[in-house]
Length: 53
Image (cartoon, rainbow, N blue to C red):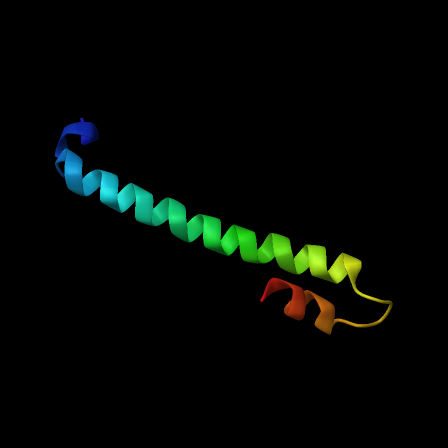
């Protein structure tokens, strides 16, 4: 029954898009940081930070 207690359609879509955008930003930042860490020279941890920017 919780399905009928939610907000109407237009605002619900905006809220869902905002949540998806936030999850994509966070997930992308984590992915790019890991990718930069793997491609960085040995014992250099700053590569992940510079690659994510």
